[in-house]
Length: 433
Ligand SMILES: Cc1cc2nc3c(=O)[nH]c(=O)nc-3n(C[C@H](O)[C@H](O)[C@H](O)COP(=O)(O)OP(=O)(O)OC[C@H]3O[C@@H](n4cnc5c(N)ncnc54)[C@H](O)[C@@H]3O)c2cc1C
Image (tube, rainbow, N blue to C red; front, side, top):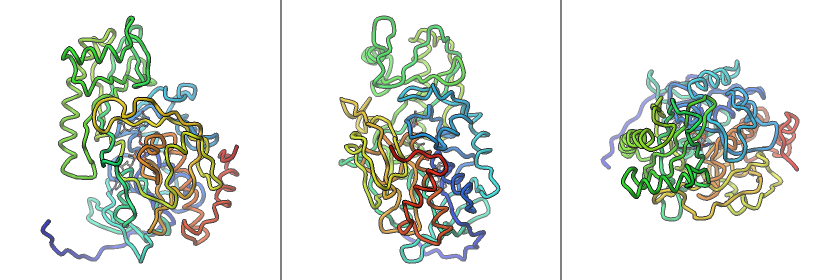
């Protein structure tokens, strides 16, 4: 690539104890937890609304479980999802429109300055230490400085810019497909099937629903790669959350691929709407109510930390002395990076597992935490802990940790983890058996 030289003086807008980059499930919990623990916080988000996949990504239901007493429970309640509807891999999706206000209220705290429509554009570094972020905004560039930065951007933008160790995808480099979710309404609840995913045995008449969809694909009524028709219920009667479009071979961290993926996925919504209306009892009069404002990204960068957790450890229900997320539970859910359906024939179930503090502390970089789907783990492990309940618990833990670093004037690597665990358990967060 041809290069040009560009330099400018950038104003420092403000200084904080903690900056949280990214206002998805992990980021909002990190910001609120740090603020409630006394830190002065900046929450930075590239879009004009907070929530990440909870709002603009149209992702629901909030899946996975974690130990008692975390912010996940508070958020599920605020979003109006009955808790007994949120068990295991079933559950009802929340209302995305309502979530935009609920989550904005959630982060509106006297200790938090929220910077919307502000994208992290670069990091300010001193040696290995991150000292601040440069934001690209409608006003141009400015810097925010902080004692500690939390990278909750999903795509690990801060860690990447800071020169952390990054991995992507499985051994052949392929990542899980991207998907554009959409909501339909007008479904006749007396007849309209619900299908939560590839493990669902639900029937249409005498036939397994997903086998019926596959047969439709064999008959040319549906492209084969869209035959896993996932139709989640939402908290609103007559609605379904459709998690079915998919585009393989996309790396969303490569800018050129984003528009191509979005266009293809939106065309798939049209195809699916015709299929649903013409082939599913109860769906004859459904209409597409709305769709994600942005392509849903399951997997991109994983930031290698002081510990790299594996799916085998998750499956075994691992315990760690430095656990900061306890009893996390979800299957290893790998949407096939190379085709339709699941990547693995046999679903890997996990016993309730812990995530250790070291997974959140990136190697080679100081003053930085990760939280959410970009933490340190293997491709297969990520396929379990990436769900939103677990990301929320991660964000909360890291937010408290970051506030303690700021208070005690230490870096994440120097923080006394036993003290962090004590503070968390004092707040009622279950961390030990
Ligand atoms: C199609 C799909 C279906 C899924 N289904 C489910 C499901 O049913 N249930 C479930 O629990 N999970 C599901 N997941 C997984 C889950 O949604 C994500 O793994 C989870 O949202 C990750 O949370 P996060 O906070 O790490 O990242 P995100 O939710 O991606 O949030 C990251 C935030 O950072 C912001 N950001 C990124 N870059 C920058 C930047 N440079 N500057 C400022 N801000 C930035 C983004 O705009 C975003 O708001 C699904 C994911 C996808 C894509």
